[in-house]
Length: 153
Ligand code: ATP
Ligand code: MN
Image (cartoon, rainbow, N blue to C red):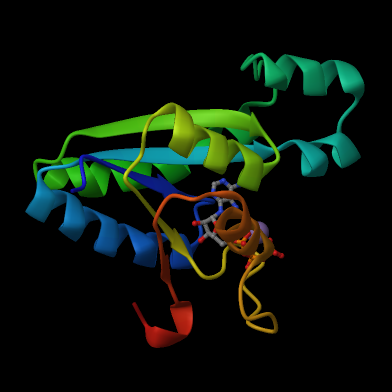
């Protein structure tokens, strides 16, 4: 049933809660785990010049190593949790609008299940769901497991 499980992560604690679920399922099903961090192009657009944005798009972070380090840390934590349990893991860093990139990635890689947090870095539970999760649910037809932070995982 599950051969490829996608965990989109923004490096937040809630996203890490989702990892526990993803790793457990991957172990039971012998699935491969894909950790995906999306550099939010709109957030980056606000703070950087067009030239820098273009370089990030091409995956050339150059002196913007802080951005790359954040991404590496987020996907690295997910992959490490998987590998600790003997699960094959892939780390991907992409640039764009997070929900679009996540949905497209799920299609392109023929992902069987997306496991993500109810909230993320903004973390405030004023909204039922974070905007990225809400938009992923609206834009993909693939199964999505949402782990709610208020449930403590
Ligand atoms: P908002 O961003 O709407 O202010 P939030 O940060 O609390 O609120 P989301 O951003 O929707 O909530 O985060 C929910 C989940 O979506 C995270 O736990 C993570 O799984 C995923 N996610 C969010 N941002 C990214 C990203 N940039 N790359 C990959 N996954 C992400
Ligand atoms: Mn967010």
